[in-house]
Image (tube, rainbow, N blue to C red; front, side, top):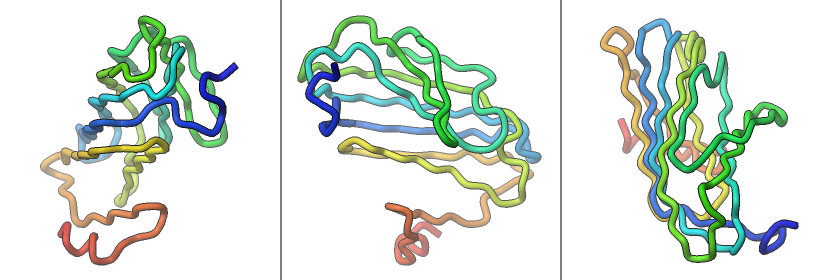
Length: 157
C-alpha cells in the first residue's frame, strides 16, 4: 500500500541545490552533488527514490545522507536508487539530505547536457556547473518542460 495513494506527491521540495563538476577536459570524470530539503506530505514514508540518467557509467561511487541505500533498479533510461530513510516519516516532517555520486565517461562529446527533472512541487532550484579550465562553457540553454525558452537562454548568456 502506498500512503496517500498513487496520484499524490509524497513530498514537496523546499530547496534543491545541485552541482556538476567536470574534472577533466575529455569528460571522463565528473562529480554530481546535491543538497536537498523536502517536506513530507504523507504519513508513513519509509524510502525515497534518487534518479540518475545520462551517458557513461552513472555511479562509480554513490553516497547520501538520507539513509541506507537499499538497492537500485533500472527502468527505461534511468537508474533509480532506493534510499531507506532512518525512521518512518510523518506528514510535515522535513528531511534535509545530501547526495554525491561519481560518474565516468559521461561527457565525451564536444557538446553535452545536464538535465534536472523535478516531478514534485518545488520552491527553489539552484543548479551549478564547474568546467575545467581547458573546457570552458560556450553557451547554455534552459529548457523548461522540454521546450526551449529563447528569452531565458539569451538572458543567461
